[in-house]
Image (cartoon, rainbow, N blue to C red):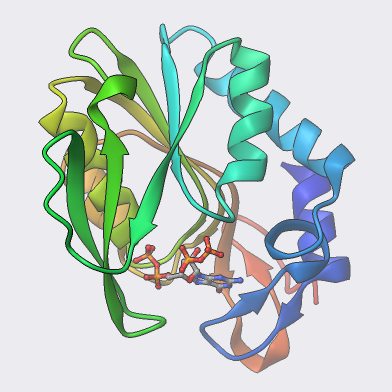
Amino acid sequence: MERLKQAIVERGIVLSEHVLKVDTFLNHQIDTGLMAAVGEEFARIFQQDGITKVLTIESSGIAPSFMAASKLEVPLVFARKRKSLTMDEHVYASRVYSFTKRTESEIAVSKDFLASGDRVLILDDFLANGQAAKGLIEIVEKAEAVVAGVGIVIEKSFQPGREQLINSGYRVESLARVASLENGRVTFVESEAPIK
Ligand code: G4P
C-alpha cells in the first residue's frame, strides 16, 4: 500500500535494526485519514471471505481494525490484556510472550463475542515474532470459530512471524512489508532500492 509506505518513510523513525517507531500516525497519534485508507484496503482484500468479526488486541491494533470492521460492516472485538491470572470461566484466554518487551501477558476475550459460526479476520498493527497473532488464533480456535486470515499493517519481514503463520497454514496479508531497518534506513520487500 503506497500511501502507508510513504508515511513509514517520511514519518517513521528507525530506532534500531529491529524497531520502527510510528508514533506520529499509528501507535500514539493516529492519522485518521491514513487509518481510513488502511481499513478500506483490508476490506478490499477480505471482502469475498465472508468475515463476520474482526479481532484485534488492545491497544494499537484497535484504530486500524475499527476502520476495517466499519468498512466490512461487522463488529470489532479486541482482546484485553490482563496482568494477573484471574479465574474467569467466561473468557477464551491465551498467553502471549513479547520478545520485544520480555514480558508475558494473558489475553482474553469474553465468550459472548465469539461463536462457532464466526469467520474471523485477525488484524494487528505490527507483525514481528507473531506471538500476538498466535495468541489471537488460539482464542478463535478455542471458540471453534474459523480464522479467515491475518491482516497486518506493518510486517517486519526479517523477523519470523509471517513465515511461522504461513507454515501453520494461515493466510497473511500485510499492507507494508519491511525487509530491513539496517543503517537507519527502511527498505521494503520487493522494492529495488533503499527508500530512506
Ligand atoms: P509479536 O506479537 O509479533 O511477537 O511482536 P513482539 O512481541 O515483538 O511485540 C510486542 C509489542 O511491540 C506489540 O505491541 C507490537 O505491536 C510492538 N512492536 C513490535 N515491533 C515493533 C516495532 O518495530 N515498532 C513498534 N512501534 N512496535 C513494535 P503491544 O505490546 O501489543 O503494544 P500496544 O499494542 O499496546 O501498543
